[in-house]
Image (tube, rainbow, N blue to C red):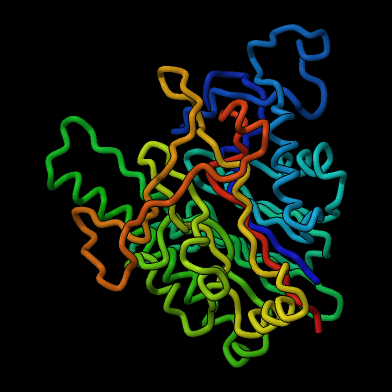
Length: 372
């Protein structure tokens, strides 16, 4: 069986703090720097200037390693990452924590103001890749800030095409002087960008696989930053050439992949949208052994930070959101209603001891497929 995992690694940075922030960076996290660096840097070799670094968090990275091996105690053959800063970050992750399982890696620096990119580690050769960071719309604006990274892998005697994505976030800040109309326009602009990204990926798939929709192996993978019922993902979710593996093979109550702490909610915003042939191979794997049913690893979910009182206690329940309305998003009667979801499920002991040890606010999602 061949396995693939998607994982949003949550602001996985690797850099030295030569200054407080990167030029033009909007990310507060770029104030935090990695202590495990490549090559010689003054001060590190002599144990000085330690305030310029954060020590590489080996506990969280080891937990991530355990999570990525679940449930079969095997690293996936392919890992698709979101929110990694550069290719050295995933290469060092591979070297230090993944036992050098992966011979091949790929990441293209994007235009994201937080300096977070999509990347891949693979046990299979990368035949070719194509970046879409310089794809423009009719108005001359870049469609993707974080890329739609198109990678062709050689899986024994046939190619597998993966399209790695991280769409525009739903988070929109309302400033103190924003009128209702101005804030509404901000929301619309944010949602429209995600809509355009979804539409562009659907267009890429339609054009690339014309004449081979039913036979080619391909998948759109990653963090879409919205729920399956959202109108802002509709062009992609409604594509006749793609199947949502999670909704196809898991019951609704088992589909959530993301925890939004500040709003005490969970939802599905991470995806495997696969071709018809790839879905057939997934179904064949499940027929052989139902343990190959798509798997969502949640033991690494905790809090990003403790609350102001220092309370570590995980909530008993959170809201499971399948759909969210706002000033520019109408109701959807077809979407499941918000429901309570138990939140005191099994965790890694290290996460229970200290929620800061969480591996991410996203869950790794793993699928398997059978080769011909």
